[in-house]
Image 1 (tube, rainbow, N blue to C red):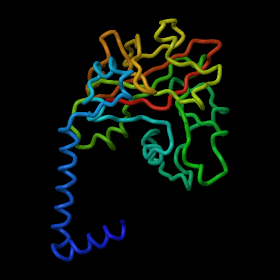
Image 2 (image 1 turned 60 degrees about the vertical axis):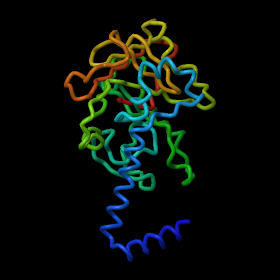
Image 3 (image 1 turned 120 degrees about the horizontal axis):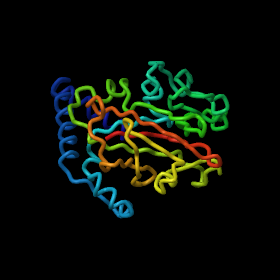
Image 4 (image 1 turned 45 degrees about the horizontal axis):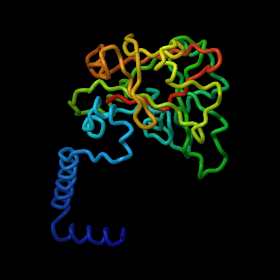
Length: 261
């Protein structure tokens, strides 16, 4: 298949020239983009349990709006390019020179900043497996309020360059998925926030999150004004998102990604 495609491409270039072939391929790409934007999203039965969330968010916003995923997971290009940590330190899975964050065993008081952590036991000596890692942002009881800005300045520069679409003000948080969906006893989720027990607190630009709406393995943050948070304090679609855990038994929350739409 690949050999045939290469031969076909060479034949087109020979017959029409490189510029004509390039223009043709660009036009096909633009047509595909337009078709994707103009076509209604296909919602199958898998999304039926989340109909209420879909109605609030809007299927077009979920599937077609500009989104930035602030993720701790690997592989992710923003991790390898130093965009997530805003250091600019670049690396690859092979070199391991990218910002790895801090081993969970050496995390001290994070000074108000949301910590990127990893579990050394997740790192394996097998080269074939040394790429897929479930790193996370760690919120622990006793650390006080921990905050991050999403998207950060590096993410805006990398992913919103030339994009004039205004943010929908939707914020989704995805917790780390535990093996077999059975988390350790000391890991806390969004249940206490929904029950308003004060054991889990979240703020967006210093405004309280009073509820969450589940969508698959993630949750949209809901404030006193609803599921949309507006353009952010600076009016540029950036949000200061803060987390606090107050539970002596379930002492920590592990966040894999924060997504702004």
